Length: 221
Length: 289
Image 1: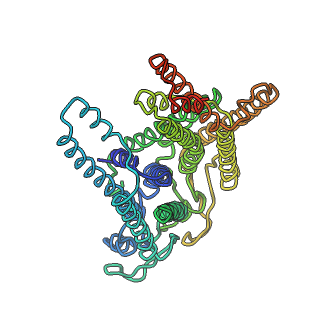
Image 2 (image 1 turned 30 degrees about the horizontal axis):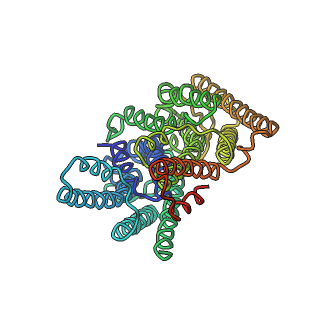
Image 3 (image 1 turned 60 degrees about the horizontal axis):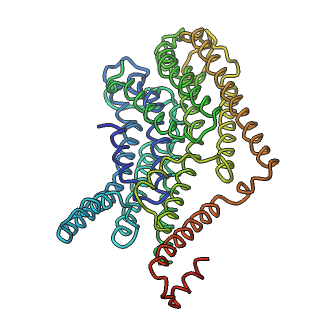
């Protein structure tokens, strides 16, 4: 189970999205998942091994690293991407349920050759976004927005902003006094944090636009 | 050694560049010949070389960066000062951003197919065979698609040049030096720091920049080719189909087909009802024309 498997799941659910939803999926996978796997993971790869404190005291580096990095950026982003992709599966589940219900109705009503054809069209049809599907879709958009915002806020709060400092000062036990600890590749980490935050905001804007479009469509109906 | 080794990182990266390749090469069908060459150059000479060769050259860039001091933290700080962002990451970002405008074209083609399908369904010819035909149809690069294609090429050129410029700003000399001198805190004085594999890095940097230049030239050639083709079409002038927007072409062709169908149906009916000329039939005949 990995990113390509998630992509396969989401693309299946994508058939019932609006065009903005399809653009959102591309932005998610190209500018966030791809960049995470291909670039960001190697930047954070040596985050703990290269975290050096100006002391020989054993255990001081571990303790200081743990104090300043409760959750690594990479793990936060992975969780964010997983949570943000999941509401789409709500829509897929609802469509599956509708298809199942219609199939049962079809089986009861017509009992001849045309049933096979009808079943095929049922599977391949694209449901219009109206009624209960509209509500499911709108709920999924709201959840996406909440998760995106929540994780961005969490990152901002845990790391006091999006910038990574070069030097942190730590005096947890067993460090003998206030020691300087140096973070590896702080500039590159800052660049990627800002990039991922920007991509996240673009996704949020797309979601809000999609929600506005759905509401407008419903109002005109 | 990192405390938590990632699970087979090479396979993960390859898988993702692989999915990326699958997504981007879907656009290939609607590109010009030069566009296809450009796509192959991107995948073979840039992405493949990046994944297979360059990543291992830069793999030990931080662990192999040694400063002539025992002061803890001096290594990290000096590395960060001289390498704000690694070449590998810059190239990966450049490749992602440069390949993405091609998706604009894919979206436009999908939009056209969607409209085609809608028109077909409305004119009552929604048989699966015809819908399949629409899916596999290759669109001519004319009208609005020409503009989308042109815009995507221009964005490609802008991104390539922007990244080349950023590269020049951060690393003004394309040559990788063997030795840098550093005196940021906490280094006690000006220390010598040694970069690992400088010659190999220089070779790969020059290679990647050269291929980048080749890609820019290919894009410029494609722009010139497209403009040339459009001018030729304009000058020919006798082809007024290209002046009419694509959608009204489609609608008029389907309306004509409907009319033809009605005429065919009516001629069949009139064979069997020669004597009876009811007013409704007369009305039908009139509306068919």
